[in-house]
Length: 147
Image 1 (cartoon, rainbow, N blue to C red):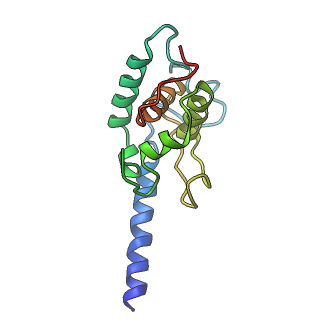
Image 2: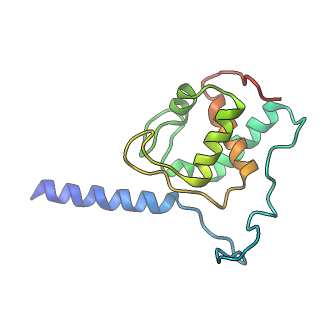
Image 3: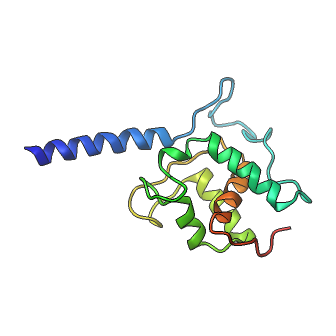
C-alpha cells in the first residue's frame, strides 16, 4: 500500500513539474492557425558584433527569469540534467548553440532519459540562443566559432 501511495505522489509531482515547464501565453497573442508569423516581433538572432561575454550575461538573466529552474539546476540533476552537465556534454560551438536553442523552444525527449522537456515557444529564437550560450559557458569552455 505504501508503495502505491509513493508512486501516486511521484506521478503527481511529475505532472505538476511538467506542467510548470510549459510556457505561458501572453495576453493578446494567439496560437490560432493562420497567424503569419507569431514570432515576428521577436529578434531572430543575437546582434552581430555583440561581445560573447555580453550575450552570455544576457542569457543568464533570461535563464534566471524563466521557468528553467523548475526542472534544471546549475550543478545538480533535478527532473532534467544540470546545466553544467549539458555544458560538459556539448562543445561550445555555434552549431550546438543553435541545436540547444531549438531544444529550448521545441522541447525534446530521449537525450537525457525518458522524461520529455516541454517546449517553450514563447521564448524567441534569439533569446533561446543567448540562454544556450549561457548554459554552454558553465563548464568554463570558451566558444570555438562564435564571433
